[in-house]
Amino acid sequence: MATLQFRVPSAEMQVRFWARLQQMRNQLLSESLSEAVRQLSIAALDDQLAEYVGQDRLQALAVFALRGETFYPVPYVLETKPLLLGYYRLLYGLSQKEFYKPPVSRFRALEERNQLSSANRDLLPNFCHALIQTGWELFKGIQPVSRESIHELQLLTIGPQLRGSENNVIGQQATRQVFDLIRSIIEPRIESATSSVITLKNAANRIVQVAFAADPDITIIETLPSGTVPSVSIEIKGGGDTSNVHNRLGEAEKSHQKARASGFTQFWTVLRRSVEEDIARRESPTTTYFFSLDKILSRRTPEHRRFRDRLMQVIGIGTGPEQQGVEG
Image (cartoon, rainbow, N blue to C red; front, side, top):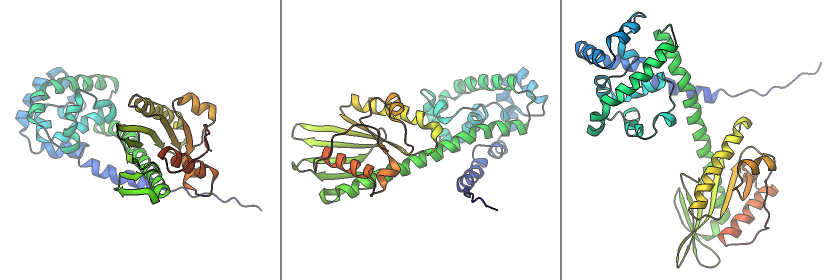
């Protein structure tokens, strides 16, 4: 009787998520709120809750044996422990990217560094009033309310946040792989190098820099007597799941459009997932060349040789075939 051999999936990422969740318990979840409340005057806290939240909303919450601060932020709590802003953000289902847009971006240090500046302290009352409106909208939509439901709502927000952080790590690793690949190809010409910038001289004795950049991921810029000339914008999308490939191409397109406005003339997109040419072109028409990450990292593949040739050509240390299309 034939037997099937199954690949054993790794639980490594879930273990990392679990460890991060344990850290968040003492920072952003109910354990953290309880620890802060123990430091407060309950009479003073109740006075602020009555002033900011109102007796009707507090009474509606008390029906479920919950105190007001479990659902609504007031300045007294956030002044005592600023990072608890993250407790309410998670409860209200708001991602960091969505929540910390201007002008709320000024409050990001509360959650990330547990810091409240004097300027933000002055703005805290109005900010709390706005968040209390969000909390009341949520309260009316999720009856009945309990400590368990609060925790579950926070976990619903934490899941995508942890996944997003993991994707950022994957993206950073992929960018490092491409950066190291470029370095290995141009090694003989390198004049100096750090972990994020490579400086070399090309065949015309002009300075070229390859650098990590926030947006795009990697840039190639040449220095002429008249000034710097942006050359290549490289976007690397290291995620392996096919379902998000359209989003990644859309993100690459936005980055390349910004790079074009800054004077770049070539736009390379490196994907871990191969995509049909018509789909890739439709999602990112600005891209000059598409490359497969895994294939350019494998030095025995034609895709690696094409990437190497084009890189050497654009830097000015060799020539390569002129061909535009989806690689891999």
